[in-house]
Length: 59
Picture (cartoon, rainbow, N blue to C red):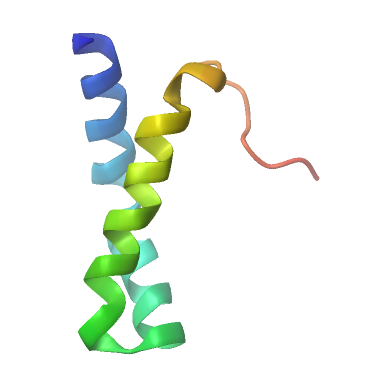
């Protein structure tokens, strides 16, 4: 469990500001924090299906 928490913390540290900026642009400042929370909730729930070091998006 500790490894999962560390992985999510690192993802949050690296990407939360950019996700928040995008969400603010798309849904407005008032709802942006909720969007960020939802994104990281989905990330937490999906953590076991994503292997470390593999890109998440296919090009």
